[in-house]
Image 1 (spheres, rainbow, N blue to C red):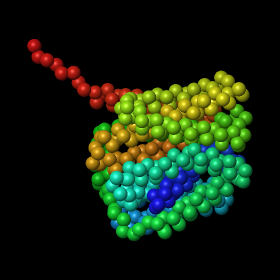
Image 2 (tube, rainbow, N blue to C red):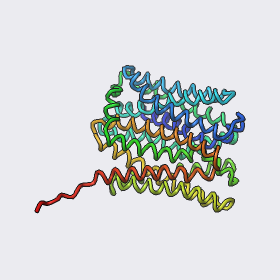
Image 3 (cartoon, one colour):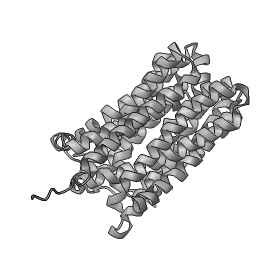
Image 4 (cartoon, one colour):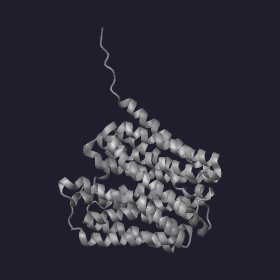
Length: 389
């Protein structure tokens, strides 16, 4: 039962991390700032997560896991409460960074705890249940949070996330035993894995994939509002994306087993790059008649982009199974670093170009990720044996 509370905490964290994309125009209007400036709320969150998560994991290595989870969720809740009362941009930015410290500590700890509390034959399912909290957040939490924000104001969305997180915290405090096993790698162990050439290439692929996606996703609502989408239609578009992401995540796992991780990842990256570029083309060429075409591009983006992810995870694990937990932790930091750069790049695009330029710029980054991926596969392919004579 305690794993369910871990999944609920992951649901709250996933909802807060992604729902901001639909709320940026409302936040910008309320705080009298530009949308591109509001987008840096995403950049600050992601950068704090990327840097803070491994540092906090090492710093709190010798503290009881139950206590660490309680601290992480309490920090995350405090960040959401601070956001509710934030009267200006600087305070809201600080609250988002506080949330990122809490979520960056909570997620890797939750995954480790799910393994510790489950019996050996159920550990895979326990991890899957925790990560499903993030997937369900994209399907249910994000559209719901966006709808609540549009009806009651963006601060109400942070209140919703705080309440869900508080329920998860209460469940964990009541349900988790003390003295859980600890297995957090040291900083030197993380750096040793990070220096592995194949890991470095994999992290570069993840960064470019995440950068391309969040160049567009951070400002998800901006071009849609330009097309005449209202709040309920933006929530529908987020639901389409979340549903496609959930399907893509499952499909990616199946295809990785059947076609191999390299082929599946390549297909996912190619589909995502095409979808993002198509997103821009539809906005530029079809203008006010682009509603259904945009939703189609969004569906393809969510489907293919998240089909890549499980294949990438599986390929990283195969690099060195003994150090897979460290490599996956580094990959999570790389993903959030990509999110941070993408948020900043998208803001620069809005400041200098137009909302309908976001897609092709994000798609170009994903295409670069595909090229690095293909180059890695070409390097790793078996070399023909030359026979003398």
